[in-house]
Length: 293
Image (cartoon, rainbow, N blue to C red; front, side, top):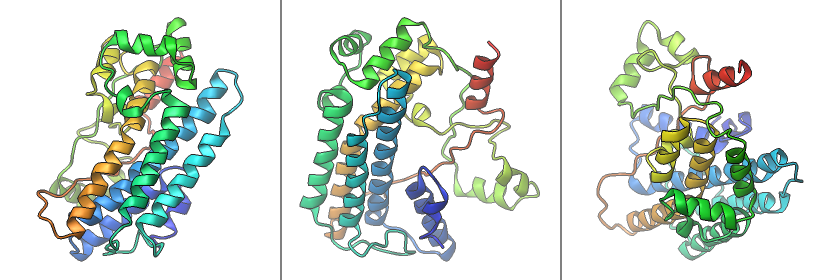
């Protein structure tokens, strides 16, 4: 059943499958070690990159009235398939209790490098890790002026039109929830209501690139000026995407170390969070404000 779960989702199918297999392992008392968690984290982050690239190069180009740049999107999809095959040669990443065999580190590092090059040439027009070092408004302005990429063009267009704060609304990030809290909510008398419309302390909490990257200096700076509007959200997506190669590289190093029986400290924590848009959430409120003027 877990194998078919990704087929139910047009986006984030891998993240949903990883959440499902971890839930099954937890129910069966199977403890996932750091190596297993690191392998799954890499799959989720690579999928995240693929989805971001898809939205940026296909959707954002349409907002500019430009034809979609489908070649890098196809390349990203191919890289994700290659990465998954290299990480799980048996083709079963979602088997309960599955421990990946010793990975071909050189091949995986090569694929991560290919992703980094794709991002450099199609999105940032500079190395993603160098782009992430940009922490001031002045440097962002310089990048926008000197970069002709799709995200830079759309960002500048929205800024010029004064649309940076469009859609801004109260945004409550979902905090880390303990197992005890979740068990109480899922087994309590209001469990059915919580499952149908999950809230936390009476709020619809947001799980998105924006809430995950809000602490980044530039995202934080734009949020001070534009709330949770379009520009901070666009920048948060770019920040998260630029960090994927580095995150995958670090997770790969941990997995290799665990499989080589080196001592690793506390396990990686990976949260796969719901991305629904219920009434009362930031998406719904922001959209309502925009529609109603």
